[in-house]
Length: 453
Image 1 (cartoon, rainbow, N blue to C red):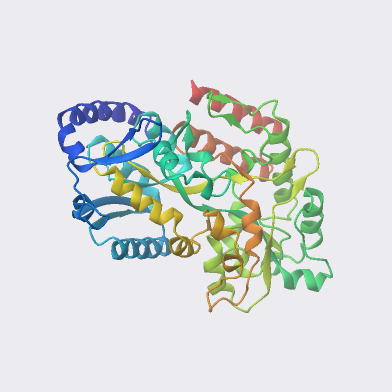
Image 2 (image 1 turned 90 degrees about the horizontal axis):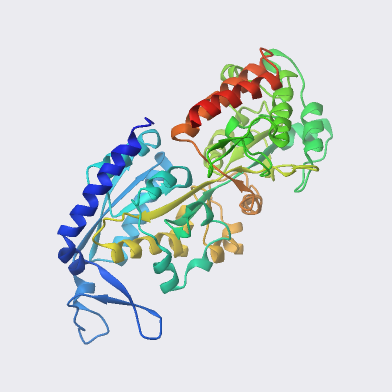
């Protein structure tokens, strides 16, 4: 992302404010306004609405078209289409016009929307791409809506944290894409080693990876397959590689980060986990059967069921715990839905968001993408024991639910993307023995300081 986009959006906001001043009458006619009653409670009022004698209003029957933007892979595309169809069937007076964009291009698409004063009413958003847009006032604060409808406590604890900034809530969460460790039961059984259990230590993880590494060349079995460098920026949730709030680089003098990068690069350099180049030559990941354990995420589950089938047995377990620094965390991949600040149909937009995030029927569909965040549903036996009939392996869903409490920051755009790229570069250099951990951290600190200036 170019550094100049922020200026572009600032100019766009100025035009939005001017446009808003000139079209306030139309907005009042189309929007339900939230006002304070004498006793301080919230109530809705719609300009010119009339009771139809049956508990409804003329405004409730007006035909409304909402625009909605989202991204994702083929599976997510199918799920979102199904959610839209369900909503329209239940709300015949509201039509959804959706715009789909692939994940790589989505952020650029949002920039185009906002700079051209054509932002959709409802915007699918992720925690890592929300902050800069929220700072520029692009999203409606949903706090009054949530307080009025008393719904904030219905989502899983912590799931709104990534969408909260400066005391305002800019999106409602609907799915959390969670990390864990997958393990190949066949490899463990052949070695006579017990399966890992929730709460296993980092030391046990390393010992297991070493014990289950065997063979050479095309016949090699690796003890583990580590995640990408996103995961070690704040592996323990103690002190991240950088302070996002104050825009300060914290590579040097950061003991937990130094421990994390040393641990992971040692495993690669000693042959217990493949390097990025070796992964490419293997031709795949955990599904190949060449890994005893592997980082995994909820989005892997559907593809693994079809790719692995009955070729071997497997399950998942929580990320390990370091006895000094604490439990491993993972980047917060939580998706939510926001309302554009310039939308003239905010109440209808809020209704669409509630349908997608607070309906068990909708969350059941969302479970194909990750862990739903509707507390009542995700904690139910129905969710924990619900698998498609085609699934050969009924992996432990409870592991992913437990891991929802272990999220760290997830920054991947702008200046943070430049620093992340440098981290990957230095990480690979250490893994290949081209530089030391100390040299890599020093270079990373210098690069980060330059970028943040």
